[in-house]
Image (tube, rainbow over the protein chains, first blue to last red):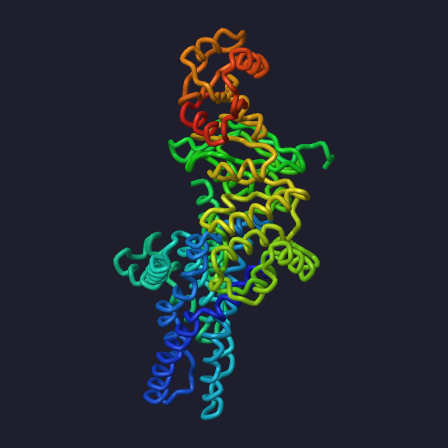
Length: 238
Length: 314
């Protein structure tokens, strides 16, 4: 755990001096502020649910930008050789990177949006539970995005490729469920509808924490991080 | 581990990338306190060997032990004993020198990090740049930060891959001096394709070419071994046409070649010093000896001879 934290804290410092997280955060808040105001004014409803859904869509575009550097840059700069010849396990490097990006995501992306529910509390009377479960959902599913981004970052030395590969993988999770209209209700349809991500996070945003959705989120994170570790190991054999 | 156990024990190590054989069945030992030079042309397998020793690459066949630990099976234990400077110095350019060294020290579980960092900054002479962003340092300083990083956990074994590459002559001399100094307390392996570096810094040389070891000995003895025959340089004042044939009559002289007016190179059988006989003859004939000395092969010649003919002298 100490090794994981060593990697994570270095990553946090790298995020602090890099312009990327600030740009990502600024873009996110601009788009979200616009959407939040628009929906609030037209619906006149004190609910965070549409805002949360919009956040997920915007993150589809922005989350891979946070993670694209993490492993690709280590390979490009040769610093991976430092990490992989230190007495640190490969998975500790991957998990450390993940943790670093998660903390950055929570503080720089999710943190500033907390004023939306505060504003609603001030102006209206929103339900507290869906807001709390919504933010838990945002953390969980934001984490799945970051984990997938780390996986694609492990595959290449090129940050642009890491970004687009991450974006496409996330997009596939978004468009899996609509494909059930072609596949029908057979076994393939069941799989596709389980893979589809919207249904899982929507439950959180409406105030319901269901085991299956938690399992879904945690498994996407685990599979992505395990694959990223395997990719790192495979690159040694090359 | 016991003190007579070798620091590095490499047995029948091979590495293939696809169908390309980067290393073929190499074996060697490095004793504690040795400074071993890895010499070879680019692409000979120096970096591959070092990467296997440091646990960065797994071997295809064979095994290697560092400080008694298998570098693949017991990699983490082996890595604790190694300080490694890769060919491309692994620096995070956005960090300050101090933060970077602190990160490296934490990675390796150094307990008293402040003390350790002060010590290596002193050794590598980078203390004045502790708060400089690495990206703003010159190449020579970066190299020193790289060496400091390799030393921060006070490892038994230092592995330096081309430590002087890309430096200017003054920096090269400085780094070599540093390596010599470090060799007093650490076991060192360094790779290079620059020959004087080896004769200046190493106690033993291992010449590798195309993935195999072609020679292994001390720099001086290696030169002697490759010579095959002794050569003597003779210069006389009174050049006479019959000198060469007269010299060849001396027992043990294989041949005498006229190099210039009054300058001869005499080849004698290995291990036989015929300078006394040559001098006596010269005095007797009144040639007027100006110079008489044995000729040693430079390491450059040894290297070329070994790597171009692939002759196995070991």
